[in-house]
Image (tube, rainbow, N blue to C red):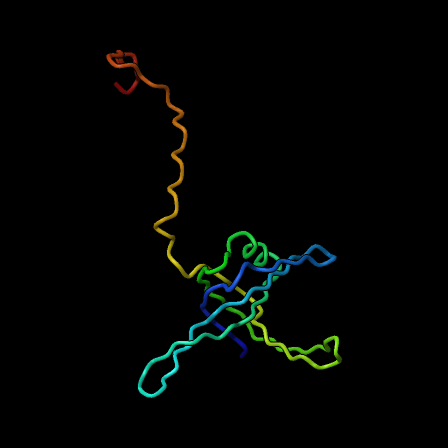
Amino acid sequence: MNTAIIMGRLTKEPAITTTQSGMKIARYTLAVDRRVKQDQQNQQTADFIPCVAFDRAATFAESYFHQGMRVLVEGRIQTGSYKNRDGQTVYTTDVIVNSQEFADAKRESAPAPAPAPDDFLAVPDGADDAGLPFA
């Protein structure tokens, strides 16, 4: 079974590319906290996990994910390799995203949405409502 569930903060805005067939690909890195015990003191460091989202998940990441946002990702780990310009083999490890969601509550400092326009007509003070069916 190959399943990864990680939660971390986006290190920068997702990088979006589009294939020749029109499918979007989003690449982003999550900084995932890791606690390390050393000499009876808790130290906190981070692992930087590259994630790749395709199609609708990529469009979602492009629209809603921003640097510093905490995100929960479920996917699978995929390894690969390629030759760089110097001819050296470079090994890669990515989380291929199956699902992703926000892990933070909505910020309190976010501006409140504008009220919906009032479609009702203003009734002048002292108006007679005797002709209304519910009066």
